[in-house]
Image (tube, rainbow, N blue to C red; front, side):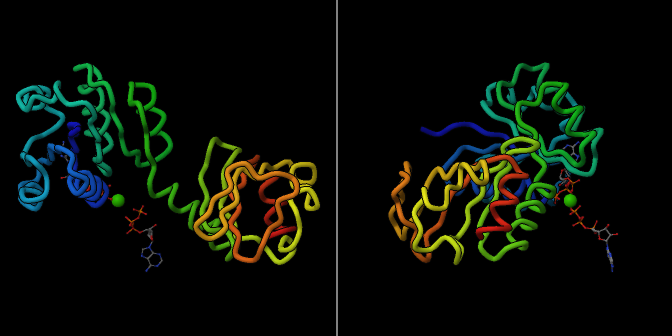
Length: 218
Ligand code: ATP
Ligand code: ATP
Ligand code: CA
């Protein structure tokens, strides 16, 4: 089933969302107030139109009300991003995802009714920082301000030991929620499961606990 999306702002971030949604066969309405940007997306999106999203009448004319999910990817012009979001909320759009430029912008967007606020530069920076700290940390996902999920390669100190021998929960307060062994994935690792070289652990916990776990075992 095709779902309808609109992407407002066709910079690197919005452009990439538009391209990926279109590649997945979704109906995408691409909007930018820059004619050159719109021309770039004429052959990619289902529809690409020039419009200023801070103009309520223009958005209405485009039939934005009938769209399930609108992504606001206006970065530098915070005022335009906020105004666009307010208009979309007033029009009753059910799902609004907005890219924030900084923490204040994020706070305002949450207050005015954006359903999801994303902060790609900050989040990608964090993920990359974690993968740089240790070669064994493959990925990192923030769950809240102080909790995360990490994907780690089993370190030398872990190989050949069972989950109970390492006693990760008691020693570090973290939970191993899954162990990947090649193509197989064990989603409910038990105490007697032994870790082999090349295994990948998915670990959830408080940041301070994960950090101790990383330092000692990874
Ligand atoms: P990038 O994703 O490349 O980092 P950015 O965060 O630098 O983008 P901008 O370049 O400021 O963001 O904006 C992205 C796009 O949004 C631009 O193509 C710009 O023309 C468009 N845009 C800005 N204001 C409006 C508006 N009022 N209506 C429609 N499009 C707009
Ligand atoms: P963002 O990650 O916020 O999207 P950006 O891709 O827009 O960043 P810039 O704003 O051009 O990139 O640069 C990021 C930072 O790098 C800025 O703080 C800038 O001052 C700094 N910077 C740019 N050139 C140099 C340089 N030659 N030496 C040191 N710092 C630099
Ligand atoms: Ca930018």
